[in-house]
Image (cartoon, rainbow, N blue to C red):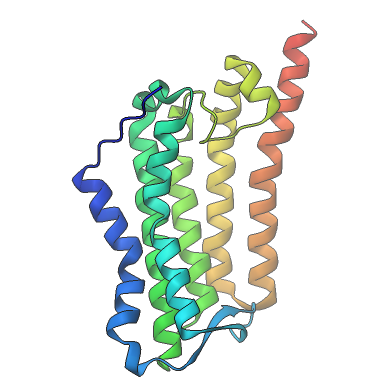
Length: 218
């Protein structure tokens, strides 16, 4: 089977957005310290570091994620179904690019001594993305790489459909917890976000199992 990948202007733009921190790091190379803070605790204190060159390499690799998502779609055995939820998939790719760009630029500016609250920024951006994506979950059709993929949704189209109708609001709940966490901050904010995110992930998986079991016992 021959794979045909057609790159669009959107592919170029999303990749440039995601790669912009790496490009910025190269332009600001002389101003950046030799060791960069790259990981932050819940109280916004740096607790992980990387070399400058290692950080730039990481930013480059992360910037290629939107193209990887494009390639994955092409390789999916059910790729024809993507046309039925192309908007949801593109929103995800754009959202991923924006998150990578915000996180990357935030890291660079932090290391240039700008007083940024990195944890607050990440929680807020993730929360917004999850809330937007939750609105599109009902459109997602069966595939092997995107959506709520459990053994039970992949084996039954009805379980897939109902699980995604249930999972959309759950994802929005996880997003709302991110926004609340960004506002509250500190340990309490982290607990709120992890709790909301955990519920939004576990609940649809459990729902798909129970629904599959119910349908098989009718």
